[in-house]
Image (tube, rainbow, N blue to C red):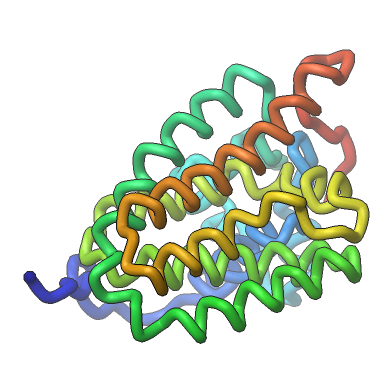
Length: 235
C-alpha cells in the first residue's frame, strides 16, 4: 500500500486581493449563493468588496478560466445555466471521477469513520432546517474529506471543478427534500460500508449518492419550460 501523496504542484506564490475575492466567490458558488443564469457585475463585486474594479475583474476572470462562470459581455459575467444535456455530462463525469477517488481513498478512511459520521450529521441538520448554505458546506466537506486521502491531485482538481459547475443548482435538491432527509441515505450507507471494510460497497454508496442528487437536478431540468435550471437576476 502506498502513502497518499500531497499536492505540491503549485508551490508558493503571494496571495493577492484577486485571490482572496476569488476564494470568497468560489465559496458562494459552492454554497448555492449564486443561481444558474445569474449575472454577476464586476462593478457590484468591487463595491461589495470595497476595492477597485481591477482585482474584482481578475477574480471573476479566474473563475471564468476554471469554467465556473462565463462572460455575457465586457462588463458582466454570469453563472452558466444548467440544461439537461450539461447535467447529464456532469453526472457521468462525477460518477467516474468521484467514484474512483472514493475507491482510492478507502484504505486510509477507516480511522475517519466517526469524523465522517459527524459531518453527515451536520448535513442532516442543515436539511431539516432548510439551511441551503449549511447543507452545501457540510455536503461538500463530507465528500472532500472522503476524496482528499486518495492521493490523486489531478482527479481531485477535476472533482472541484465539477462541483463549482453544478453547485449553483443544488438549492433545488435541498428544497426537494422539504426538510426531510432522503429515505435512501447513501451517506449512511457509505459509512456503514466503510466500517464493514466493504470497499466496493463504499464506492457504490458514494456513486448512488451522486446519482441521487444529479437525477433530481435532471428531473427538474426536463420539467421546466426552458429545459434547464436558470435565473435571469443580477448580483
